[in-house]
Every structure is written in C-alpha cells, then in structure tokens.
Length: 186
Image 1 (cartoon, rainbow, N blue to C red):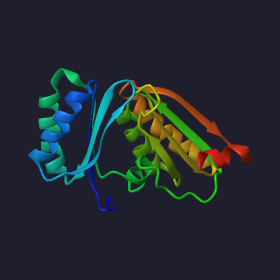
Image 2 (tube, one colour):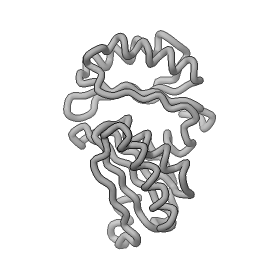
Image 3 (cartoon, rainbow, N blue to C red):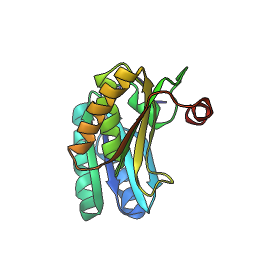
Image 4 (cartoon, rainbow, N blue to C red):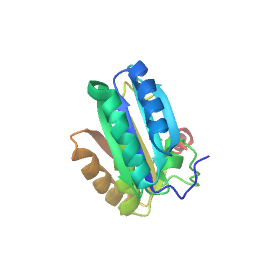
C-alpha cells in the first residue's frame, strides 16, 4: 500500500500496450521508485504511474520517455502531490456525505491527476475518485465534494491546471445532488 509520505509522482501514458510494458520495466530498473500502477487503458493505451523522491522519479521518467519515444502520449512529473490524490486514483477515499459535487473531465490521465492535485490544494474539498481511462475511451475524470463555495474554488483551480495543457474536456458543478445519485457516486 502507498504511504501518505509520497512527495512526488510521475506518469507516462503511451499509445501502445507493448511499449507501455517495456517502459514500465525500464522505469523501475532505472531508479528506486514504487510502481503504483502499470495497466492498459482504453483505447489500447497504457499508463505507468510511479512514486518516490523527486530525483528518483525524474530519473525514472527520463528513461521512460527515451524508451517510449514516439509512443508517448502524455507525461507528468508532480512533486509534492496532495495526500488525497493516490487514494483517489485507487478509489479508496472515504467520503461521509456528498454535498456539492464537482466533476472535471479530461482527455488524458495525466491532465486529470494534475487537475485533482490542483483542486485539492485550492480548497477544503474531499477527492472522491480519479478515474484513469479504463472504460472511458482513454479519457479520465475527477470527482470531489465539499460545500458549494469550496467546490467552485477547487473547480476553478483544477480546470485551470488541466486547461493549461489543452486537455480539459468538460466541467460540471452539481450544487445538491439527488439522493439516488449519491449512492452511485460514493
């Protein structure tokens, strides 16, 4: 299990499953990093997510980019990641109630992680999930909750972070989700 003391995460998203497996192997052999996730996502893409200290993650990402070359779709190096991000990627967050609901949808996994990190750092919200492209045609999305003012502030920060790479697809704030929806989200 991932510890809350992780300061840096790195991610490489590739358009080839075979190249993705090769990249994952090269990355974990290069530096002392933890392989958080290495998995195919839709449509035929592959992501490699690692964690560790800044220098190790930087080394690992560099070798991954060289190994993946033209198969790399997106990348991410995120120092000082917010403590809620990794549990949200694994859908392990415990949220008691669903107040206002924020949803940020992106074209890539990396942009969704950046949006989640920025949103969590900007306001007192609880990340619910960072869904990373499985069954989504390669897209990703972030869900979070809190009071309406915090959700709106987190939405602004998260969307600004995702839009800076041109990979923001959609954004929605639902001020008071219907109780039937709450059971499906949490």
